[in-house]
Image 1: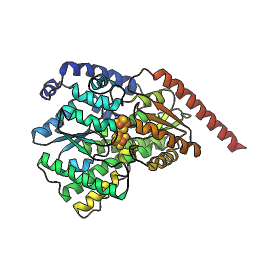
Image 2 (image 1 turned 180 degrees about the vertical axis):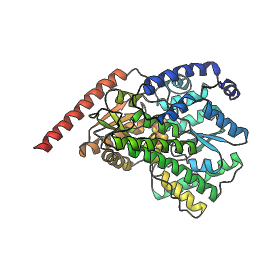
Image 3 (image 1 turned 30 degrees about the vertical axis):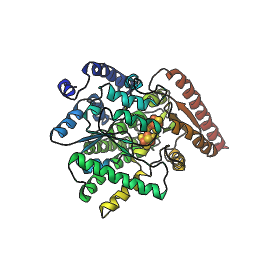
Image 4 (image 1 turned 90 degrees about the vertical axis):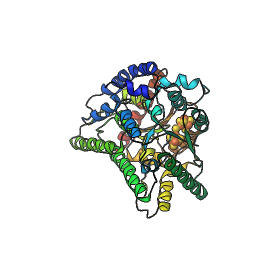
Amino acid sequence: MADYRELWESLGVDLEKHDQLCTVLPEFYEDIYLSQENRPEAMNYFNFVVSEIHGLRIQELDEHRKKGGKVLGSFCVFVPDEVIFGAEAIGVGLCGGSDFWVPDGEKVLPRNMCPLIKASVGAKTSGTCPYFQSVDLLVGETTCDGKKKAWEILEEHVPMHVMDLPQMKREKDKLNWIEEIKLFKEKVEKLTGNVVTREKLEESIKLINNKRKALQRLYDMRKAAKLPISGKDALLITQIAFYDDPERFIAKVDELCDELEERIEKGDTVFKEDAPRILVTGTPMAIPNWKMHHLIEGNGGAVVCEETCTGTRYFSNLVDEGSQSLEEQYQALAERYLGINCACFTPNEGRIDDIIRLYKEYSADGVIYYSLPFCHTYAVEYKKVKDALDKAGIPVILIESDYSLQDAGQITTRLEAFFEMLQNRKTNKEVAATK
Ligand code: BJ8
């Protein structure tokens, strides 16, 4: 990585502390990612993005700001990027996925709360995340209680706008959400000095839809019997989608998919033939939270899909591109976003349908329900999901884990037992089929 110290200093980054973070990440990445065998060539771009995670993209954001542009940071897939890009601003995802930031988060938040929130707040209060230092406005949302209250603390450090997300999906909730998107648009227009016209919104809707389509194409490759890419790599790509330049990202994912198509044709795979295919569902895995995928794949499993916000919830369903007026565009946006099945909604039966559908589409053998500690909405929803999966004959286990590696041994033991059970189940089915 080139020398960005001057840039970081100008952003108010705590250089000394940031150096500590920079020494941990490359080694961590090497162990988890670069040690994989037979990776697709086109993953080199994503390796490069990680190697430049606090460099090149930060420089691009800085250049954009120097030209008068604005940068907005968000924490949830409900914040409509289309409005941000429609006002010629740049949106970046800011959820913290590193244990490094948790102790700083704990200085201002209770310890017994979700690590994603503690890390996100700690990333800002420690002054060690150049993305946080680059944003002109943070956009929060009223999803879970922990996040909702954390915005009040972050607001002491940086300007904040909170979107009032409904917790139900009735017609009146949809109308409220349309109004929230409009209020957000006004806020963004005021901040940027740019008007979000119908034409600009049409363009940004297409752009963000194209990003979704690229990710949909990537995920379709994971339905193949012989998997051409690891779950770890697919997760990394979705994580990068939250902050990379959208047009460049789309082009690079398409390049990768061309290569994956060839691999599928040749039967070139990154896994052993009998690797159990795992659908992961639950809380998001913000970069660099690669723990669960690393443990699953390090113990012989293959992650085929993520029903998470760093997975299908991020890119499923497109915004209708046929709207004729701004009003219709806001309706189309509200419609698409309210199709996301987050556990903060009640009821949330759509998520159960999604899990069962994805299990079948990706020919999974089992489901791992991953929950960050103290995430009440996802933890409580486990019961309903488990009941439905039991009824459908789909094996599932719940793994609750934070960002630290202390429980890696314990999780490994559970994964080994789960994979053995899946293997026995498969063998029994094959035996029964021959009778
Ligand atoms: S749409 S999943 S990104 S709210 S922060 S709820 S893990 S206790 S992130 Fe989320 Fe939007 Fe929903 Fe997706 Fe739990 Fe932690 Fe809260 Fe979390």
